[in-house]
Image (cartoon, rainbow, N blue to C red):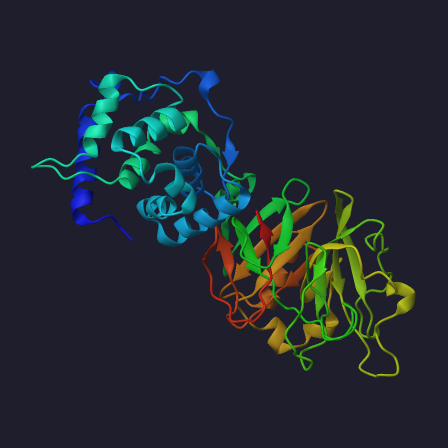
Length: 420
């Protein structure tokens, strides 16, 4: 919700007067763009979202409460800002909360200006001229309506001196947004797994993410029946009941060394006579965990289940995170079980993840490029491990929480990305 018209007029006057008087009334206004000494600068805090939303939230917390937000508060208000794009609404809703009400609801305009602007943000006593200047904007006159305290708060937290004294840094993965590029029939971002965290979450990641929601766990253990596995923070996720879905799914995830992650690569390769077996590619090790890609098969004959206890007994533990998809290529070999399926290789609109040794990962989504064309293009770029996540128009490729390809209707989305 936006400020009322009368208040907006007052705010416009505030901006106009401040711009006109910027050079001549620096001392009077009490905010000097270059006045802050280095030792007055607060340690920077990392924002949750890329660009302005996190900065607005952090500085409003410092203004209203004299502290930085905790992680939950920062994410909550930054999410609201990303939805509304209205800093005035955020300031007003914050001011309606119990913490603000207990501190500032009953104070005078003079106490408000001294406490918030000078004590919380500038960390100094007010000078008389500057103090009177700011208080005057909160007082209604016969010709000029007063502006609200929330409007004044938003103006304060965007001033050069205050942004310098209260720096807000961007999450490291935010720089990846500059690297999102067009690929033939889609979009993608490429990064180094050893220096950028790739994780899965049950909500959209805040920087870059794709929909990775082929999740089925209909059997008694994660690796039984229909994909069988997705894990977030070490906890297997429940799945929708879809026992009739295609069995030739796969698993991508990070598993802790010593808790299943040390599983050696299987010697079996994709071939017409392979039968139903799990083929594994250990991609790269990071922080005592192994990034792994599986291509899962199991015999449709109940007498010879694919789940082989000699290989997998106890090995379903130890995942930091895992997502389910269709393993298209593992260690350079095509998945022949799905290569001949039109509904797998000839469809469009897929999110995908691909790996290139020694540690490069690409996240992307296709639009007009078929899965077969996607695999051919990725192979030409040197990617030898490829998994697609979904198709049929149910794909999202998120940048800073905004979907830029398509939406998903799956009942249990799992998001794979960076900056989660």
